Length: 176
Image 1 (cartoon, helix red, strand yellow):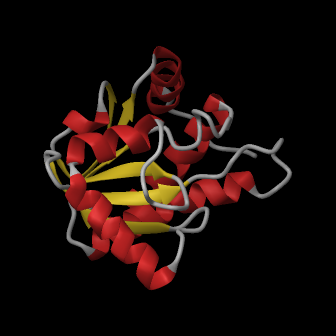
Image 2 (cartoon, rainbow, N blue to C red):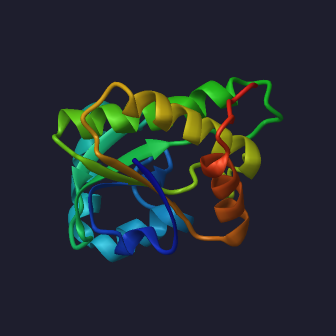
Image 3 (spheres, one colour):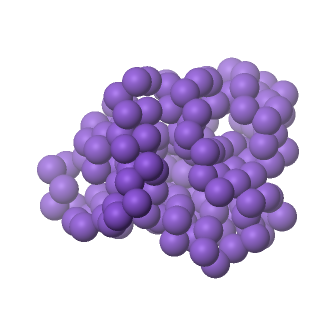
């Protein structure tokens, strides 16, 4: 089941909240900063341990930490691609963010996962294209997993509109 919500992802009760992180995993602006602020220092402490162990998190990859004070069990941090005109593998890297996040959720027994709009803020990924990739990746993964619900949590009306159109279209398919 896929659900669309307009709101603040830091207030969503679920098993795992996905963070649109930067490669340093040490917080930043947008969703990343909001999750770190609302979740508290426990998230940053675990991110520092991950960085000490493996270095940065590469684009398309994902790591998991506690959710600290958030109403979730985990935060899955994934690094979305910066938009460079679509000729640098951005679509596949964004798809990997969703697939790798869902794989981590499954490995950790999560049944509900909340996603923000990865890469559509300062990273400049076109919102309509990002929504198509997100919905296609999640639909594909849900067909093969035990996850019961994925929530797309949109902070702005433009993203809500993109997702609503995709999720209500009976014949929708992603074509790059």
